[in-house]
Figure 1 (cartoon, rainbow, N blue to C red):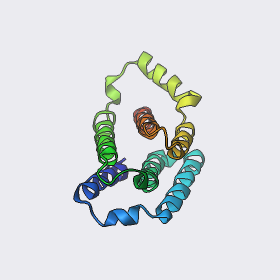
Figure 2 (cartoon, one colour):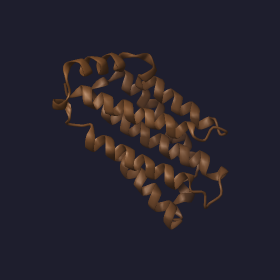
Figure 3 (cartoon, one colour):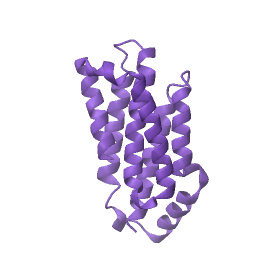
Figure 4 (cartoon, rainbow, N blue to C red):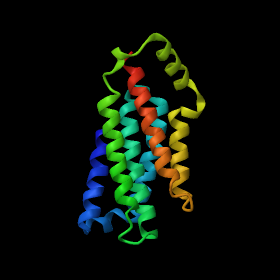
Length: 166
């Protein structure tokens, strides 16, 4: 999730410096391109499972840009929601990258079996979570739904990364 981490960190920096690039990130073109790429990543994830890490990373990055472009005009310029959520995503994705990859030697067989059965459950399938994230962007009155679903996607990514090593 390196693209997502770098993009989230860049968004934090741009917000703190009140960069003029924020006007470009708020354009309708970013929304259309981001949604198209996000849907393409969902399809790609279903079709070509060998590149799941890349599909997750690009999807999360595209949706972050769409979320910012779609939601930022609705809030005041000094609203901390964008800075703190982007910073939260940086810490969460970095934590997952550091502590959940290359840890397969520290698990017992029973826990592994439970994790594999959880990974097969429909509610934690990547396409279901990704669809929920796209729908959450439209639900403007539920501003916490997007970060919660992105956290669930990051956890699902960690589960996939962990099980892929087996």
